[in-house]
Image (cartoon, rainbow, N blue to C red; front, side, top):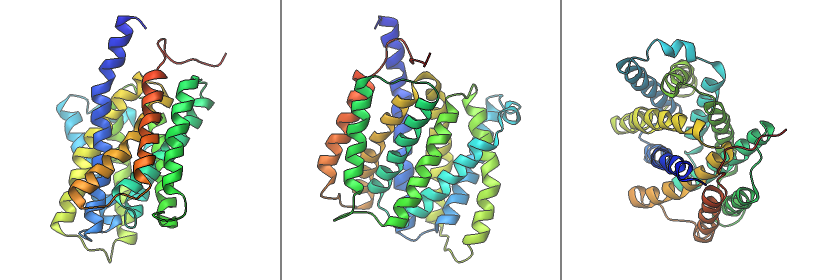
Length: 295
């Protein structure tokens, strides 16, 4: 790898790390709100998407990109964003922050690897090895037995992960990250209000719960996802998939520090597999000359 190539790879790391921290913050904020019963899942989803839409529309307008939002509007990323946000919130009623993030990003990895292969990307042996090790750690942690998650909640979180994988794959083609993200939030927000009306009539909404939902939407989601869409075109889809497997560890740390959650007995060895796999895939498996396409 030449020095310019190395510099280009390293320049991606700070925004990539910032996006991953935002993803973990979403897990902690959502779990904090739902575990305390400060808000219900439908209400959280609606406030998260609406506040994210407002924040992104204001930021885009301030940056002079308001007119580009309409041109970037597309139904697929908006639908994927809504499916992810809804499944995410309803799953976290029964999952702790770390376990939920593990299931979520395991499904993300599977979806993005499949999409990358269909699109012609051919990851090298190191990335396959790293991805397999990280995914194996996730599968072991979520396997039936002591500390295994509730099945329905795990299924909802896996659905959310698949939707997020589609959303991320779509983002690799986004030429204008900020307007594209603002458009996706603006289109999904009205649907989230319908969800709230259908399932949120009996939900409690406290000021603390609403504040956590708005923080998740305006900061961790709106800001974090705009950063993510800016990073995606600069890295391979398989690298993006494996890098996100670091998020569950960040979410678990946040759950322990801020929510008083205890780690599963399986977590320490699973964490070694996940971190080792991510390291192999992103550092050793990085291609010096870009993505290898199918001929």
